[in-house]
Image (cartoon, rainbow, N blue to C red; front, side):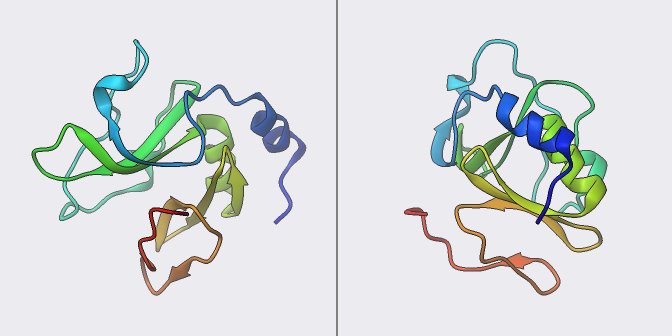
Length: 129
């Protein structure tokens, strides 16, 4: 879908340590200065403010298995670009991952743009994409 000029400009300016969807990423490998904005179990209800921090240039969304020090899956994105997607309820490729936002249903990222929201995100887990 079309993005605003500001979102397109931020897409080009993103300064994230990695691109694409990452697997088995050690949290200890994050650059110095990264802080946790939200960390909770899947059984907790997540709100939009939980996944939209108010500061920082780049964000990392991911999922970690209980007791692990690695993200099973994650993606880095420019914080302001992702905020813009949320405000406009859009989906777009950014920094090598497909980011999607649908109010009242789901927000996330994928290695492909075939997203099924019914009512949450679901699909095949394919680490090769």
